[in-house]
Length: 157
Image 1 (tube, rainbow, N blue to C red):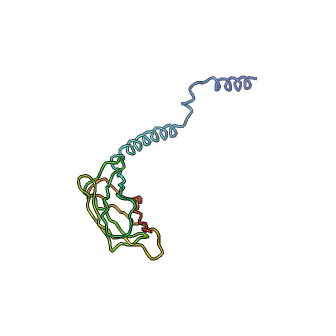
Image 2 (cartoon, helix red, strand yellow; image 1 turned 180 degrees about the horizontal axis):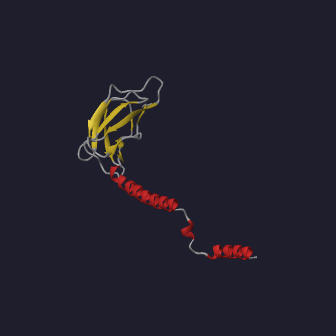
Image 3 (cartoon, rainbow, N blue to C red; image 1 turned 90 degrees about the vertical axis):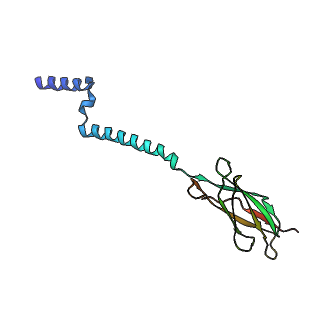
C-alpha cells in the first residue's frame, strides 16, 4: 500500500514541478549557448561583408541603333546607381554585325567614351549587333559580370 502511495505522490509531484530546465542534460544547455553565440558571430561577419561588395557596371550607347558605315558612337558607363564612372575602358567588338578588329576607348570625367566604328552586315542580312564590354577602372569596386546593352545595326533598305 505504501508503494502505491509513493508512486502516486511521485507522479503528481513531477507534473507540478516547475523546475523543468534542471532536468535537461548539461551538455544540451552548453550546446545551445555555444550555438547561439556562434550564430551571433556569423551574423556580425555577414553584416560586415556589405563593404566588400562590388558594383555592376552598364554601358549606355548613343545612338543605340545605327546603320552600316563609318560613324562615332558615344558610350556612357554608369554604376548601378546611375552615376557616371570615369577611367573605365569600353571595348566594342562585332557580334552578328562585323567591324574591323576591336575598338576601345577610356571614359572621361563624365563617364563617356567615343568609339569610331565602321559596322557592316553580311549579304542578305537585315540587322546585326555590336557587343559592348567594360573593363572597370583598376583598383575600383566595380565589375562587369552581366551583359551590356548591344548596339543594333540595321540595313538602310
